[in-house]
Length: 167
Image 1 (tube, rainbow, N blue to C red):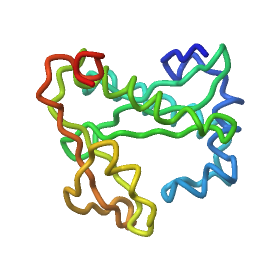
Image 2 (image 1 turned 180 degrees about the vertical axis):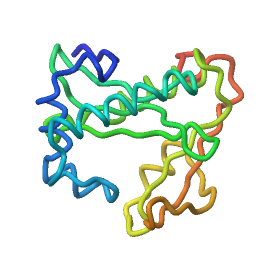
Image 3 (image 1 turned 180 degrees about the horizontal axis):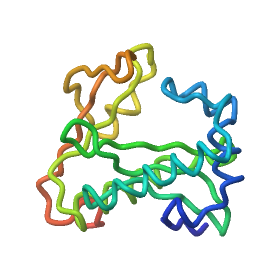
Image 4 (image 1 turned 90 degrees about the vertical axis):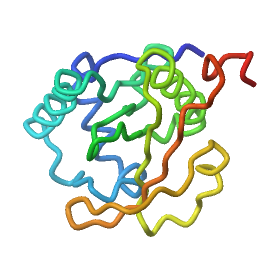
């Protein structure tokens, strides 16, 4: 299985719209308004995601698996933090951990970040996986009147995060 990171601007708008309006995906995204996500809004959304690369030196990627768009995510600027996003089409939900590992290797090794965060809805009850990945509770946030719990993952003190020497 070949997992590539690409820019969202290189992905078909129809593929992005299909993902960002998928009912199963929207259940995991409290800030999403998939009912109104048309081509015009998709273009604005992609442009805003691409602008993060210009403004902060990082931003969301498109995940391409064996040549097909599987989802988007990566690091997004959020109140001074590089915040992890990972949105996959249901057909690719089993690849989350592999993609997460590629994102964190980029964040800690190539980008030199010392920590990343993840914001989860306060209603989320299944948290064991977040703790198993090394995240720790780090506070709360409110975005567009929606409450979130912030978790933080610090760069391990090993030389290369994600390398076989650190495992």
